[in-house]
Image (cartoon, rainbow, N blue to C red; front, side):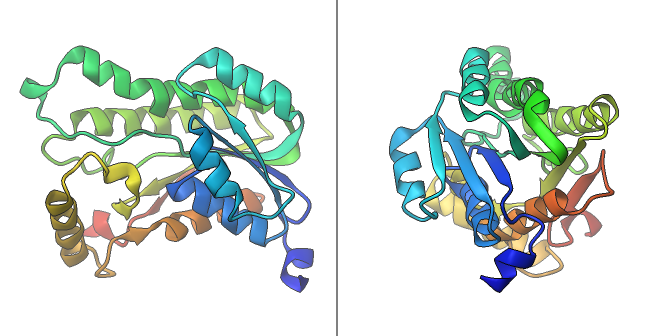
Length: 245
C-alpha cells in the first residue's frame, strides 16, 4: 500500500488497448499494482473477463474490435478522460519471404498494428489530462530485420516514425514507444511449438542476457515511459542486448 501511495501512477487512469493478454495484460497488472485504475480494451470478451479476474475490482474492460476505426472512437467516448494510453494490440506474426507474400495479406497486418495505433492516438489524445502520455509498441525488426521480416520491419519502422511525429504534434503530451526483442507471448501462436521453441532457444543463445524476454520485462518499460516526465519522441529498446550482437 505504501508503494502505491508513493507511485506516480497512484490514482491515475491508464487505458491499455490490447490489454487482455501478453504484454498488455502484464502492463495492466503492473500499473494496477502501483495504484492506477486500469481500463483494458480488447476484441475478445472472454479474454477480457479472464484478465479482469487478475486485476483489482476498480479495473474496467471494454470489448472492441480494434481493426475498425469507429469501434476505437466509440471506446474512447465511453472511457472519457484519462491519464495514460498504452497500445499493445497485435495479431499473431507470420513470417514470409517477399516472393511468398501476397500484397493483400501484407496490407492486412498493418490494420491492427499500425492503423489501430494511429486511430487510438487520434481519438485518445484529446482525452488525455495534463502530464499524461501515449506509449505505443514497436519491435527490433525495424533496426535489425531477418529474412522473412519485410512486413514486420515495415510496421515497426512506421510506428517509430509516427511516434516522433506525434511527439511534436501533440506536445506537451509525451509520446514514446517500447521496442522489444523476442518476448514469450501468444504473439508467436501461429508457429508450431517446435518452431517457437527453436526461435526462443536461438535468441536465448544470441542475446547478451542469455534469455528471451518475458511480458513483464516489457511491461516495466511501459511503466517507466508513463512515469518519467521529460522524455518524448523516444523509441526505447528493451531487447536483452540483441541489437548489439
